[in-house]
Length: 63
Ligand SMILES: [Cu+2]
Image (cartoon, rainbow, N blue to C red; front, side, top):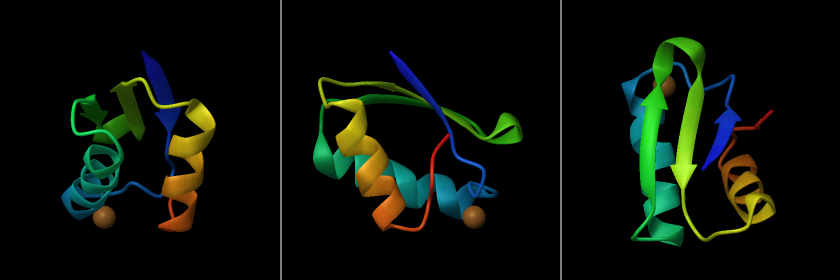
């Protein structure tokens, strides 16, 4: 389980975009969003760096 903080994830639209990116990379990933704290928990075989890069490319930098 990987937990990322995505400061620019501010609304349900962002959650939808990020969800689409991650399930596009790994259809079997399990995601849990905590919008209030800007956190995404990701259960996936993808390397962390690939996830961070894909989200950054879409304008969502991660911490
Ligand atoms: Cu948004």
